[in-house]
Image 1 (cartoon, one colour):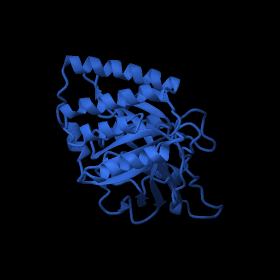
Image 2 (image 1 turned 180 degrees about the vertical axis):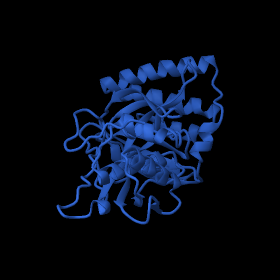
Image 3 (image 1 turned 120 degrees about the vertical axis):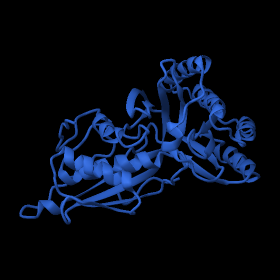
Image 4 (image 1 turned 180 degrees about the horizontal axis):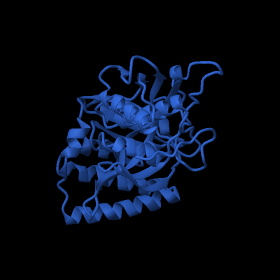
Length: 332
């Protein structure tokens, strides 16, 4: 794997997200003890997820202001990468890949934190890995493009496109960008969590029960969503995301789909948004809707009657800060 090292000021339009902090140490210091930090946002499920006529699985991201953070310090005995919490084996693996790619034979300590819960369909694992790439890169003084970050993740697990600072169509099983779609104005998602966890890797290994008719519909929905995001048409975005939630019932039925769809209609929401490989389903509203408080309260009350929990997320969009320091982050 060839890595194009980037130091100093990042080139324009890399989509790299928060620029990794410099791993440079003071003059006369020990470069083996350099450290760096990185952060990556999660997503609230997907605006659209399915299979295209050529058989390729894809999703369209919905970035949210909730973050994973990583801190990496070079040093320690030999080439070992230690990680905290100790169960983050994939993050350890990607840290080693980054060090090897830049020709650094040493190890270090990787510390991960953040607000993204696991197994809920919020891209927590992808965000951990992207934050790790950025933190290790910062420690060795190298920046990576989104495409280079994809390459690090590709051999580890299916991943969301959280290395891009916009909504993207992404081939999550192949870990490859399909198309950048752009940014919407921020949304608020009132979410119902049915509980439990979903193993995303296992979920993505399974066959997808979509025939020619569904695949053609997914192609049409992707084209409509591309146009809707480009034009800032939230109503059209909501129609596509609601249909995607409905189609996903072929893969994983949701008991809350019908009642939450009713609540969305009654509260005049933009549409449903689903964590297709997770446990959350939500109703989206424009963050600048003057009736947002009343509408979101209505959906909260409806969700309170069902088993599970309710939370609220704000998406990243036009005018948002698409970066977070490693020791502080977005709010839900």
